[in-house]
Structures are given as C-alpha cells and as structure tokens.
Length: 88
Length: 149
Image 1 (cartoon, rainbow over the protein chains, first blue to last red):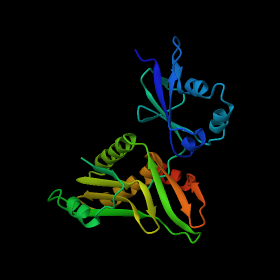
Image 2: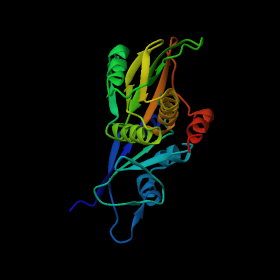
Image 3: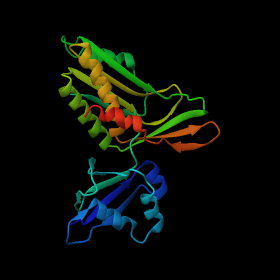
Image 4: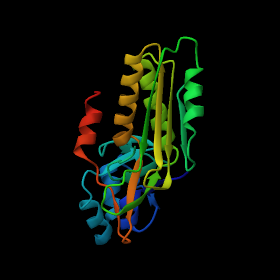
C-alpha cells in the first residue's frame, strides 16, 4: 500500500525549488493537511522553505483540482504547488 | 460539449469559426476572441507558456460547460497554445455560438476573463537582450474574473 504522495512544482516555483516533483511519505496516524504536507516538504531544507515563504499567493491543487491549504491529503494523491496563473 | 484543445500548433480561425457556425440551425450569433503576443516596445521577443497537463484540459472543460449552461450556448471552443510564441503570434482562441448576439458576446468575455486566472497556465517573457522573466499576475485580471461571480 502506498503511503506516498506525489508533489509537483510549476513555473517559477519549479525553477526555484530546482526540480519538477518529489515523492513524499505521509506520516501514519492523524489526517495530513496541505499545510502539514508543506511542512514536511520544507522540513530540514531552509532553501526550499525560503522559496515557499517568498512566493506570494501560493496556489495548490489536489488531484488536478484547485484546493485549499486546509484540505486533507491522502496516500496516492497528486498535490501541485504553483504561483498565480497567467494564461490567455 | 465544449471543444477544448491545448496544443503547441497554430489554430485555423476559419475552420474553427465554420465549425461553431455549423453546430446547429439555431445558431444566430457567433462571438470570437483571439489573444496574441503583444509587442510592448520594451524589446519583448517571445512568450513561453507552461501548463499543467491534465488539469488544464479539465479546468477548460469545466469553464466551457459553465458557459454553455449560464449563457444557453449551442457550443463553444477554447484553444490554448503552449510553448514559445513570438510577438504577433496567436496564443488563445475563444469562440461562442448562441441563438442571439448577447449570449454569444457575454460568454466569450466570461470565458477569456475566467481562463486567464483560473486555468493552470504560466507565461514567461523573453527579451531581445537575453533577459527573461515570469509574468506577474495582474490585479486587473483577478478583478475581471471576479466580476462574473
């Protein structure tokens, strides 16, 4: 059984983090929110932590649908972080 | 069913217009918007559009469906290009077909206003002197999208 989530980064965030994705193991037990997941991703990595802290209006999607930082992440989910969208 | 295309290729405006026009005998008005790379007199040469494959198509499909229901459209088309485009090249095509002009015009405005801030695309600008920078989100675009809430 997978206990990992796939974390994707796009655009300026991808460039600053320096990679397109991470596989992140979820802790067992309590429900994990997007906010908690971000804490895991940036844990022990001051550089990545600074990137997220300096990204104004960070957005998140879970399984390709826009989400909030309070939403719960489950094993196998695809969680994407990105800056505000600038299409058209 | 909205027609959704995400592609690196140019689109054929005549063909897309004919398709919307021929959707139904009830089509009385078509409205089209084409967005292209604007030269700003600051040495901008090209834009590169990045997107989130899968989510892009899903969001555009939802937007198109919302427009069909909200404006009683007989059909709509959203084509968005990705990759690198030089000044003057088309980026996006939005077309709406309705019984009457009001719905067609409103639907196209709705679609382009909403997709600019609601679909996962990101623009990077490349300049003649070698500079390159991500485009910042504009408050005016957020305001235009929110006006349809």
